[in-house]
Length: 132
Image (tube, rainbow, N blue to C red):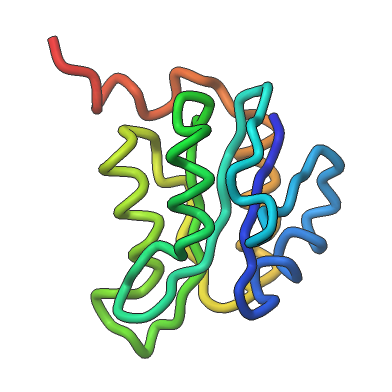
């Protein structure tokens, strides 16, 4: 599964680098409207008071149909807004929130995320979100 990420401060980039995953793509402000051709898992930081970064919003406006899951970084000092961008994206696009991690994450965060990506099943989390 492709992993797409956005890193405002460098924390998410450091996290992704430590996963040693190979199929990755970094969103930049210059190419936030790039069209993806395969399903992906998104990793993003949270800015301001729990907000989704603007380049991520622009990217998802174009590519949300291929989004399969999300993970988010944040700072626990923000309390309820910790990694809230992930919660917002998960709820808006009805995809599972795979992980919330602080700053650039711990070794166990990295391993947990990598395992979830490698073993990702597209039906993961969808049953709970699906209306009958």
